[in-house]
Image (cartoon, rainbow, N blue to C red; front, side):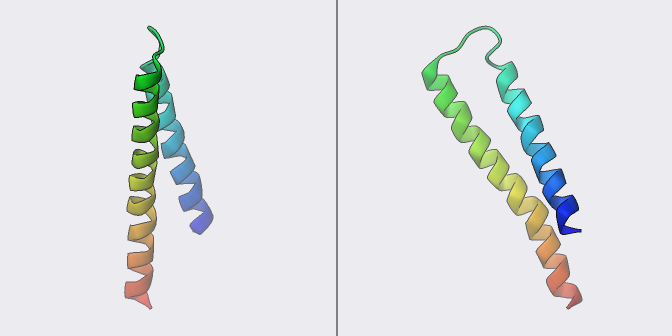
Length: 63
């Protein structure tokens, strides 16, 4: 089960990364890249908390 959650997490991060890359089709600027990098890290952290938080909450309730 935990491996499936890791796969789901990496797929979600890949989708977020692709969405961010689409923003740079017109041009690239370093300030925007830094902000989008920060947005990417925060988004992936929130996805991690959402996926694994629910999993460990359910696991602790069943134990």
